[in-house]
Length: 436
Image 1 (tube, rainbow, N blue to C red):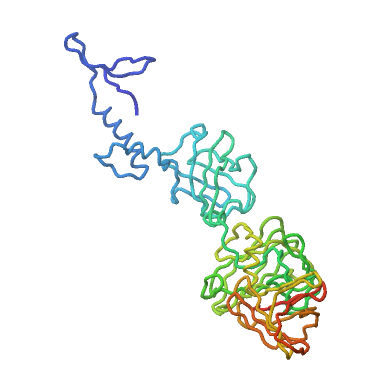
Image 2 (image 1 turned 90 degrees about the vertical axis):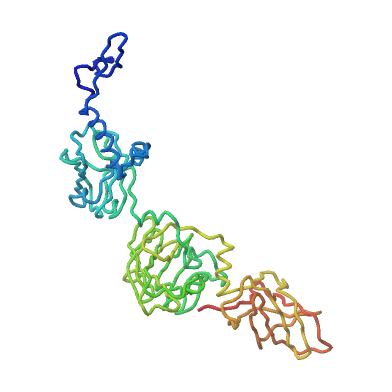
């Protein structure tokens, strides 16, 4: 496009050709507006509007503004992206004719493949130029993912990426629900001291040994000296009918060694390294019950890892801890323990009758998974005017948020009595196991 080029054009300053109005009184001829100039002006503006994907509309006087504001003019469609994973070509229409014209211009494209090393970009027929991070750092394998939306600017030396997010990476910015309970091993209602566990024996809340194992909590993770750690996931507790044929991701932080992961009938490996590491697996069609997750060092031996997460979907989303209170409520559906480390500390009150039966109702934080949990206890006394040891459990049941238990103890006379359930030693506890 150029300024008016008719002989009647006038200099409007700085050698610029422009228009003047006709003045019949002064005998001044006006500048002739030529069809060539009007058509050029029209087509220049229409090129912007149409390039932005807008349909010309005589009744819309804001199309040029919207076209410029849309930033579509610097977007390369899929047809314009070519080359290889590491040597990308971008074709624009109209083409750029000089790299200098690109300085500071944001270019937008969609990556076609994962990169495998340092990258270059060639815009139209211009020189091949490095693509880097904003600080000039060269790209490493996997920095660019297929489908990533890339925004980059040429600074006279390189195309520096301002944004590079794939759909998976965008999704990963929002933490998804962790289907594991006590993924950071902070809950320990069983008072497990760490060490050896036999097959299927629980240590830290919701985690048990698969085969003979040896483990200990360390910080917000687990040091697994040998064997395999195992958690069963109850889909219904998370609102799923089942998790069969479902793409899921298992992730941990800073695994010391490669980890063998078994999820239902699927298996894979999380590679060792810093940061959050993951493997995405698809469960089998037959994995339609409680879902088993097992983690061990690949090839056997000792390993450590932190903050385990299981989520539905591809790619690991960030770890986001629930509060300790929330985690305890989730875990208490499967296991609840009352512990009093003070001799004569009271668990609750109940009714003692002559034959020694002692009936107590205790409150539950949440309803148990089953109404018939396995009951274990140690160092419990019944206490009226004197203490007498609890000798057994004759019956028990959980009803909503109440656990009702009938203990046995020595016979008495003159009852019934209001009686206390108390700690005989500092090791006193009463535990309810409703694990899967």
